[in-house]
Length: 411
Image (spheres, rainbow, N blue to C red):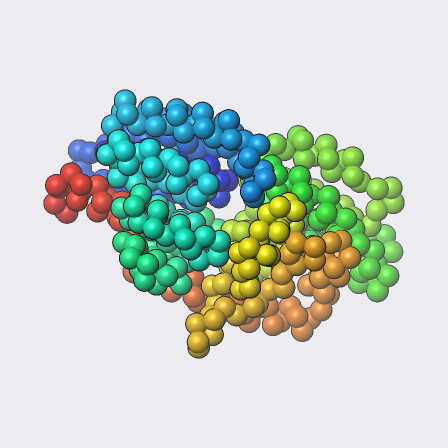
């Protein structure tokens, strides 16, 4: 089986690597898997012939994408050219709709069927693009349970395969084990700060989160929750696609004298950080769901560019939550239940974020409420279809498409 795969996001690189491993396990005896396309470190380690490094494409929002148009167009030509030469049996794309709609259009002209694994959130931003989704993709594999109904009602061939985070998070590890792994003592007060995975996200959120954490540390010291000489430990776990040295330099440049905050930056250990921390401030995205599944009290934040913020507020006019934790749990009428607080756009500023962090760290009633709600979340996410791991279910669907296109019968 020859597969073209494209995963440009840090999280989708991890999900795609798990998918590749599951595909190899499920392939019929005598069949081999050849993969090429776009990916990061995890996919490369899983055997991807890398045509374009995922880090070259990462952008965020309407204005940031414009700055990468030349590289995006070059990547489209490169991948489409390779598809024309190699004639893959199938293509699988993950997330990143700005790029993958364009890539799917080129692959469709070449007669390559395309499966969308982890589809775009069209129910938030661009419901009008459903028609294009139907034209370009032969199957959608969604990872959020409420998405299946949305896509099915829009006429898409869709399957809910469960959430791949269940394959990847250290769900069986204790908080004490996570702290020992990170060399954190049991009495340290720990706040996780997650600015995002894309360069533009880190640029926009890093100092904002550091300043917010500093305000929280000073406030907690004033209230006696931190001892006179004790510091709040802020952990900043970066994905493997991030520029670690650049972030370290920015943290060092930010660090004020006499701070009540100790900052540690790491890479590739977000799951352990979320399990070890007492609370978190997390940029809206996959990491919020990771935090909820691991039981970490957290707030959701996001500060877009001025243009993206204007589009979101005044043109899209989306009024439901954006955090995945708040979207996954539904009430009896199917409406999202707001579990974690969200500070978005102009609300995402140091005073409010610092106050939220203080409450998450030191308010027992709030922490107890979140613990109960996160248990509801785990029941929703873990109650997925079937008994197989999500990546194995996604692999089975992809193989089903492959067999149907090739006229093969199922084993």
